[in-house]
Image 1 (cartoon, helix red, strand yellow):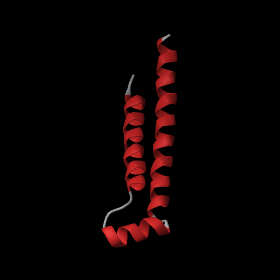
Image 2 (cartoon, helix red, strand yellow; image 1 turned 180 degrees about the horizontal axis):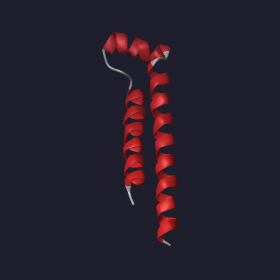
Image 3 (cartoon, rainbow, N blue to C red; image 1 turned 60 degrees about the vertical axis):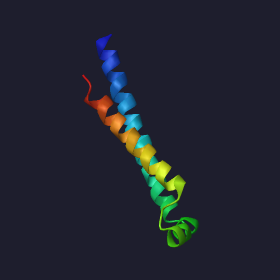
Image 4 (cartoon, rainbow, N blue to C red; image 1 turned 135 degrees about the horizontal axis):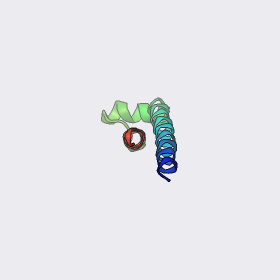
Length: 71
């Protein structure tokens, strides 16, 4: 039973890392869009969606690393 739990932790950790990487990639793509660049020119700040993607991706990556580090 302990081995199955360890395997599930690794699978969920890898899945969280993948989701986090995709969210960061989508955030980067969002930041390069025309609307985001215009918003940055006029306000000096990135759009809220870009920030949400980056924050969500970072949280998923941290949680994935924690799951992979468990024994």
